[in-house]
Amino acid sequence: MTENIQNKNQNEQKLKSLIDRLEHTRSLTREEWAFLIRERTPGAAGYLFERARESRIRHYGHAIYIRGLIEFTNYCKNDCYYCGIRRSNPNARRYRLSKEDILSCCKEGYELGFRTFVLQGGEDAYFTDERLAEIVSEIRAGWPDCAITLSVGERSRESYQKLFDAGADRYLLRHETYDPEHYARLHPPKLSARHRQACLWDLKEIGYQTGTGFMVGSPYQTPENLADDMLFLAELDPQMVGIGPFIPHHETPFSQYPAGTAELTLYMLGLIRLLLPKVLLPATTALGTISPDGREQGILAGANVVMPNLSPAGVREKYLLYDNKLCTGDEAAESLNSLKERMKAIGYRITACRGDSLNIRS
Ligand code: SAM
Image 1 (cartoon, helix red, strand yellow):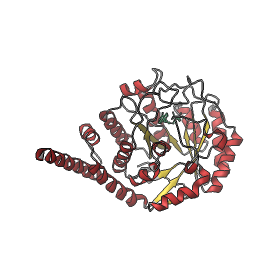
Image 2 (image 1 turned 90 degrees about the vertical axis):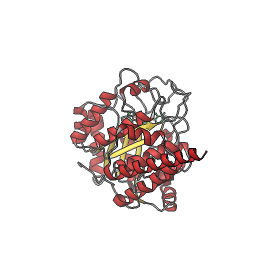
Image 3 (image 1 turned 135 degrees about the vertical axis):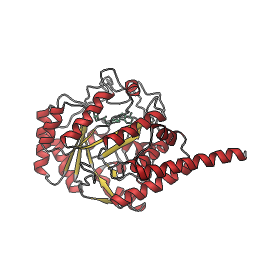
Image 4 (image 1 turned 30 degrees about the vertical axis):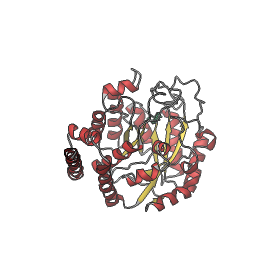
């Protein structure tokens, strides 16, 4: 019994000293990452969150940046096994917004105080480079003080360049999981980890503020997979990282797999904050979906961004990536005041500025 307690104490000491080393050197081996993740304890997590909060406050104070999310199409040519808008889901109610719809979302968002618009969608062939570049340049002309973030999946380098030239500043493309074998268990053979990662390097080289990320608790994921994800983040050094728990969707091949947990997602947020102290790190919708105070917990674990939904109310429930995805209440951009109050209650303040990364071209 005493020996058991002693072992537990030793384990926790080791975890805390790895957390300290992470904070000071920002460099751990794969084995150390896997140990930190596999052997985590509530005590170590509490310690990690304290260190992560201090780090984010050092760089960003108590500011929370907001991004207005416009989910502009749920048509997708891909067939990711986890995703509710995958091509093979015949029951997804498909929609695509017109340019005018998108511009009116921006207008509404600007009036609400948003200074970043995130255009996210499935890989929809309708949105050719020409169509998408035209939308981006009209947003750029209409709201020159705003950042434009795109999140439309894998495209050619030329396409990314055209969209950048049209005025897009940022791009979000989660790598989903670094390990090619794990990637292959989540995606059909046409998609590869290697290609996804190559897109990220292209985006970075073009000059986008680049965001990547992964799902936590996706089927077959091991602590070693997450360790590889952390090593990839260290190598890519992105300006933004979006992570969220995997949540099953009832009409996908992964409908029967358990959801990732808020507990592990929060722990990974804390680790990412210490690895990349200046990163822009959202408390995501998926985290808010699996836990009613997921947003607040995410901020307290080191996150500093929230992304309320600016899509027209009529389409929000059709962008159903996973079951029970939040799209009303404080998830809705119109409820910004309520979100402000919730952030205020935990000592943070929503700010209406572009919120660029502090490590641009670091
Ligand atoms: N098509 C773009 C792309 O591939 O990056 C953007 C849209 S995609 C639907 C946005 C993100 O949703 C993905 O990167 C994935 O991590 C997340 N996602 C999809 N299905 C999910 C699920 N079942 N649970 C949690 N997150 C999911």
